[in-house]
Amino acid sequence: MAVERRRGMARALAAPLTLLGALSVLAAGPVRAADPILQTEESDIVKLPPGGPHRILVEDAVYRHNKDGRVYVVDTDSGKLLGMVQAAYNANVAADPSGRAFYVAETTWERGNRGKRHDMLAAYDPQTLEPTMDIDLPSRALVTPKKPDLAVGADGHYVYVYDTSPTNSVHVVDTAKKAVVQTVDVPGCALIYPWGTSGFSSVCGDGSLANVSLDASAKPTVTHSAPFFVPDQDPVFEHSPGVAASGHVWFVSFSGLVYDTVLGSDARISKPWSLQEAAGLKPASDAHAPFDVTWRPGGWQLAAVRARDSHLFILMHNGTFWTHKEPGTELWEVDLTTRKLVRRIHLATPSTMVGVTQDAASRIFLTDEAGDLNVLDGATGKMVRPIRKLGESLIFTVAPGE
Image 1 (tube, rainbow, N blue to C red):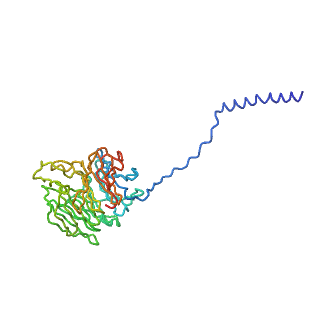
Image 2: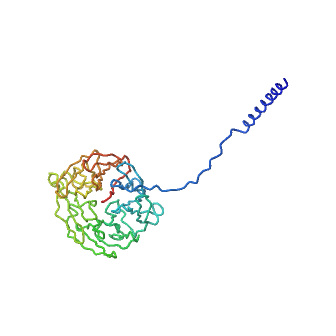
Image 3: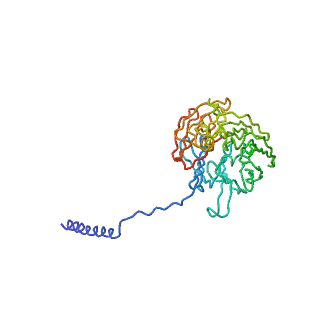
């Protein structure tokens, strides 16, 4: 019995002690795990894989707040935006032909909209989007972004920047030296159409070409062609397409004439032919009959060339003369060798821009007012995919091998 009592007493004494322990724990609050040791955050850079033939650059001028322009890097096979870089007020973008870099010429002011002006040319690594060159320019033409305001020679050694301060000129940037090595005056002429590794041409106000060849020290020699169009009767589009490596440019006039041109110190300009005649229609009128309605070229980046088969893709609309800014309601594909229409593609939404890749499985790029980038199959003209709301003011594309 004593043992039982002792055991009972032991059990009786144990219960109050357990209760007291529980009360103590409750009074102290709930038991918490130790706080984790936070790791030091480290910055890194995501590196894109090498780009394929369908990775393109798209410039968005963002006209509603165009100090915030940008260049998008877009994979049109997946429909994904891979990255972007700033392209401040009325910037221009061009790419190295071998894909080693792309270039953005832009302008900023120290106090936002005032203060000291800075004109710059930056080069970007296409995989990290990190700047690899960032230099000051003497100035640059501050106009609405146009592809011929910035150009790259066929081997990527020279980058050309068009300027109008204090007169029409072109700054020549040596990408190896990362410096402006020459400024070439081209009075009365504008824009840049590169040819070969060390030459470019500009279109002049009298309808002629100024042709600039650079020697090994970047010293220029300037020659002029005879006038080949009458600017106040039927001017040519600034965004006429060309191929830098061959110096081949197809200047397209407002009425739809095509001037097949091989640039050089002695530029060769062929007799023009009519886009409308290529489609079995009558040639369009020029400024002498401005109210005649017919199919005419129009838009911003209104034409692109696929060099491997010499096919021209050009936006067309039905209108009068001087409607050259109207978006295209059709996309015409024209064989530049036979000068015959291959097909007419009706566009569900009008487009001011057309681009094309140079590969065997080529893609065609169009845009619309919603900021979509529409990707078409280059062989069939059928929609591959829309990339919805890519930007606000998509104005031109840069594709590999242009």
